[in-house]
Length: 324
Picture 1 (cartoon, rainbow, N blue to C red):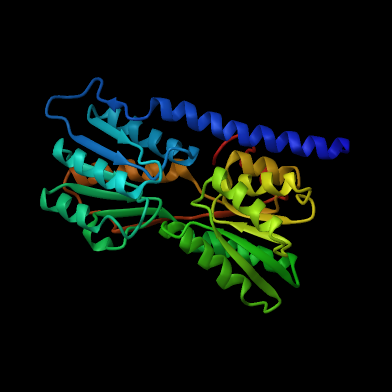
Picture 2: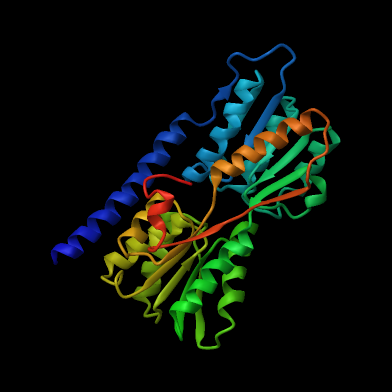
């Protein structure tokens, strides 16, 4: 193995290990009741995110926790770990605890209608973050990145780099955000009939699923020269699989998130582009909306946070070692 290949492999190993360790540390702290210094007659706010095996949700949540603690209110956090049934159970448990508001990132965007109806019957306010639910009329506010535009931005850039291509897409079908990103990418690249989607692979947006699934596709002899991933946990897993098969420099890699790990890959030329999400901004906007709703004020029903394309040309401007 050449010195360069060893360097690339070491980077991939470091990134994968860092993601796994970070998830383990955070999960060990998850489930905490952030109730210190609460005021008399404080609000009780419950949150169930899709999974905490993703630093995106940690950053988003920290913005909200900071605001709730500053207001002297209470917050209960739960991690369904990508299990839709568990998320529903967690939400029912929080309703039994008497929460005033629910903050939810759906595991399955079609599965929460019944429990949300139960919450509304109890006059519980509901804010949806990062990915939509099926019946948005039931919720008070939905705040997401412009997920369709994220995929479209990457797709438009892809068109400038390829006259023809064979693309594998890593998907997450139960998340509306993932479906929208994939649709945006596919709609953009469909302008060129010589760009072929050869396979869509369900990976739930998770590194530990994306890596073996892409490895399997390679071993099955699927011919491809590019991979588009719905998020950058999947991108890092795809990079690991490509590196393992000595294909990382031969296959181009595109994603959504612009996580520190993917930006490191872009900076080293091992990944071509990612559409940047801004979890701090989503969390900040959510914090504002939460208290506007609790104070009985009107808010926008749907809030889209803009995204930006990151390539090797501008990655340094966004800070390789942190989320934007």
